[in-house]
Image (cartoon, rainbow, N blue to C red; front, side, top):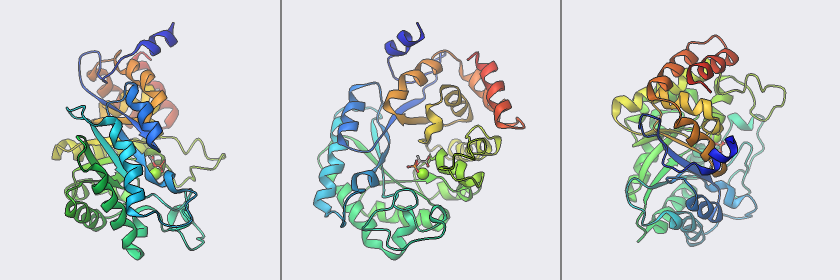
Length: 316
Ligand code: PEP
Ligand code: MG
C-alpha cells in the first residue's frame, strides 16, 4: 500500500499545508539527467562533473567539456519557472582523484588539495571548466547555477564568484567545511546561494572518515552538532534572502527531509529514485510540524534521540 502511494506521488514538493520545498535530482551525466527530467524532479541540485572524467588521462578540451555539460542542461531547457541546474566544478581529489588534476600522493587526502583548492596551483583547470559551462548554456532556456566544492574561507568564495561573474554565471558555494557554516553570513554575502554537502559536512564536523565502516554512528547527519551547522547556514540564507539547499545523502531520508525543511532549507537534492518517498512524506506533514521537529532534533543530546523525537512529532 505504501509502495503504491510512493509510486503515485506527483511533484512538486510541498507540505500538507502548501509550503513549497523544491525537490531536485543529483546526477553524474547526461543520461541520468534525461531520466531525472522524465520523473518528478524540479531541476538538478547537484551535477557532479568530476564523475565524467574519472578515466580521462588528460584534461578534456573546453569543447569536449561543453558537449557533456550541455547534455545535462538540455533535458531541463524550456521548462520556465524556477527550473535550474546546479553544476558543481570539479571535486577532484580525496575519494575521487583525477589523473589530470591530482598529481601528488597525500597523507590525508580528505584534508588535502581537493575541490576548489586545486585551482590555487592550477587556475586553468577552473577557468577552462567555467568557459565550457558558459559555452554549454549558450542558447538554452534554463537557469544555470555554478558552485564550488570544499570552500573554507570568505576569500575563496569571493575569488570563485569573481571568476563566475566574468562569464555571466550565477555563483554559489558548497557548505562542506564547518568553517563556512560558522561564518555563513560573511561567506554568503559573496555568492548567490549555498548548497550543503551533508556527506562531507558530517565527516568534517565529526572528524570521522565517511568511508570508514567503523564510524557509522559518528558519521550520521542526525548528529545534533551537524544539524546545528546546517541551521546556521539556513539562517544566513533566510536573513539574506538567498537559497540554501541540501545535496548530500541526508536529503533522501524522508524524516530528515522534513527536519531540513523545518530548519529553513529551501531545496532538497538527491538521487532521483529517492524523490517520491521524500515528496510523499513532506505532503503528510505541516510546516509547523517540520519546524517543531527541527527544534527538537537540534537540541537533542544524540543522533538516535534526535531522530526518535523528530519522527514522533512528524507522526512518521
Ligand atoms: C557531500 O559532500 O554531501 C556532497 C554532496 O558531495 P560528494 O558526496 O560528492 O562529496
Ligand atoms: Mg562533498
